[in-house]
Length: 421
Image (cartoon, rainbow, N blue to C red; front, side, top):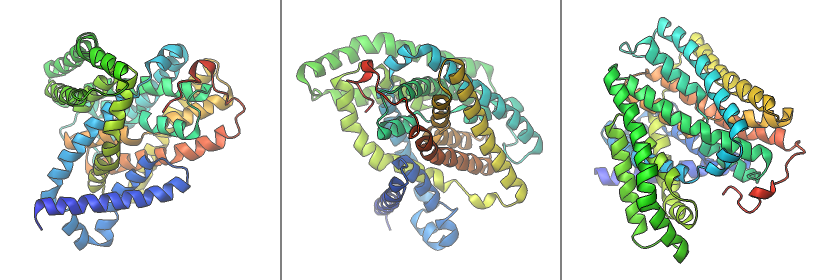
C-alpha cells in the first residue's frame, strides 16, 4: 500500500474509533477530548498492538509515523491558537486577586511535590534518561504535576452552562493564568534540556521578546486593523484568514527557533487577537477541521508511544499510583486551600479544585516533548499518560456531583450577555 493510501486508511480508522468512543463517553458526560485520549491508547501497542500485533504493524508501520507526527504538530499549533483565541483576559482582570491565589497555589505546591518525586525517581533509575541531571528531572516533573488543562476546563464549564457563575468564572480565570504559566514553565524546561545556560537565557529572552513584539507591535499594526475591518463587515475579510495563518506559521517557526516549542507562539498570537467578530470567525473557520481531524491524530500518535506492558511489576504499578495521587493531592489541596483563603465557600472551593485538577491535552503535549527531547523513558511516559487520562476522566463526574448540589449557580450580571462559548 502506498504511503498516501495508508495515511487515508489511518485517518479513517482513527476518526471512526474516536467518534465511536465519543458516543460512549458522551453518555458518561465526558467531553470528546477524553474519548480521543482513550482512542489513542486503544489504537496503540497497549491494546491493539497487544491484541492484534500483525494488524497493528500493518496499520501503523514505523515508516508511516513521521507523517502522522507532522500532521499532529500542525494540529497542535492550530489547536493552541484557538485556545489563545478563547483566553479570557476580562476574567483574569475581574478575578485577578482570587484567581492569582488559586493559580499560584495550584502551580507552586504540585511543582514542589513533583520535584520531590523526581528526585526519588532519578536516584532509583529507569524513569529519566542517563543524560538527564537531577535538576532537569525536577523541573520536568514539577511542570507535569502543576499543569491544568484549560481547554478541558472550559469545555466542562460550557457543557454545564455555568460560564457566568462564580464557580465557572473564577475557575476559568485561574485556569487561564495557569495555562499561561504552563507555557512559561515549558520554556524553562525545554531550554534546560540543552544544559547550556546561554541557550536557556536566550530562549527565555526570546520568549519575552516575542510576546512584546506580538502584543505591542503586531497587535496594533496588523491584528487591530484586520479585527476592525471584520467588525465593520460582520464577517472575516477574504484575505484575513490567509494573513492570520501566515502570521501563525511565522509565530510557530520563531518560537521553535529560539528554543521554545511552537505551541507557545501559537497560544500567544491567539491571545493577542482583539475580541469580537474576528475571533468568532477565526474559530469558526479553524476549529472544526482542527478538532475533528488533526487533534485526534495527535492523541493517536501519543498512544503509539504508550506501552502499558512496560509497567510490568507491582513496584512500577505502585509508582504509577504514587504519581497519580501526588498529582491529585498537590493540585487539588492547593487550589482548595487558596480558594477558601480568598473567600470561596467550601463547596465552591472543592468544585474549583476538581476542575483545576484535569490535565488533558496540555499534559500530553509536555510528556510528548519530554520523550522526544530525551528527558524521560517510555516507562515514565506511560505513567504520565495514564495520569493525564485519569485526572481528566474524573474531573467531569466529580464536578457534577459537587455542582449539582450547589446553591450558588446564578449567572453574574456582568457576564450574562457574554457567556463562555
